[in-house]
Image (spheres, helix red, strand yellow):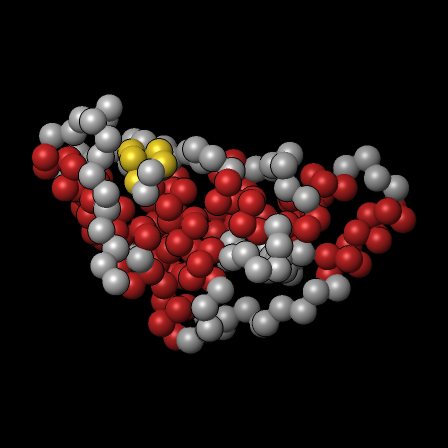
Length: 190
């Protein structure tokens, strides 16, 4: 199935060359097989504004939100060498988007889809970048954190600390036990 970017809304007119560049950038961040730091950097250097909002699938989006959602979907796929390569390239893309001034436009892909067993979970590597750039967040709960291992994810530790501020040591211990009482696959070896 082809992942083609939808045409931009008439409210946000763009010259044809920028529209084409944006469509290329969208495809680079929504399809893990196409993740390419070099190509996104080239698009940015040729004039594409990374943090510009655009219409995609009926919603106003930014590239960062699309990449995060794509990573959450990818994270739920079976682990194999190609998936690990996708994760490394996704981290490079995240870093480029954040260094280019991208902001989290909405918390929907970041939170809503992480609070149940049937929904995709943000990879720990992406969580670290997002918390470093925008955290700590006041909307995350222990349910969200149960989806991402505390071990190997400093961003999750920061969020756990934020959630537990003002609690007694006993309450913190109970919450720590609850968050750690989740089975995770071992992290990929690098």
